[in-house]
Length: 319
Image (tube, rainbow, N blue to C red; front, side, top):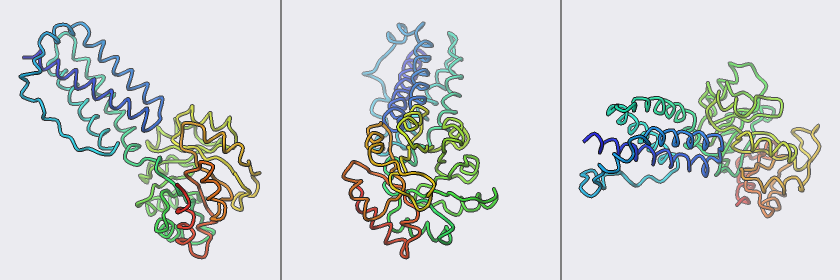
């Protein structure tokens, strides 16, 4: 009986790890997470290897009363990921409980999966991949809460809190801005983590991508002003990169426009690209025709007389 239990548990754990590995690869585009899950799967195979022949001989799939009992109907990547984290953890626990032949070491894999679940699951729940309009809030144009509400009503998929303020004020603002749109905090991974925001955006002189993710556990975006910086952000495991300023920006007049050639090269990278800098309702259609699917906008939306209408005018032109 124990051999049949172990055979089924090893199979469940291996299948769960494979599903999670594929999700890390194709949904998150996270090479570090994929490698970690692959390493866990190989460690599981090494644990099983001494008894694999015996477990295979004990298998009785045809008369297994549990056949067909798996629950289907999950649709989102978040649901699939959550189910397979639990499936893997439960299977590893069963291997421990049947622990003989040194199988109690499966506990190390189970606890490693707990840690990985905490780190990765929030990223599946709120993905940056579907973001089209990314609005950067700015208190120079009025109350941030009002800007956020009107921008989201106009179609904003993500908001960025980019504000110079003391920590308590930033934390209060971040908590107040949480809502239907993704909330990204600029620079401050600690504030993002404390407020339960969806992620953080880091620049060249901020925390490295991996360290920012360790602190906030969510989406990490990275600024790039050149193809070299964009490729470095991809290698570091960023969830998206900002590319620009493509046009002259009224928000950051000190930064020279990078033009469209750099943008075209950045769009070939295997990562969501956010076009930023001088985006307006009059030029976003031309960007969309070049393959741009996401733009970040500040003054053209939150500085507009009608924030909702300005957001809608840009959002409807994006594929």
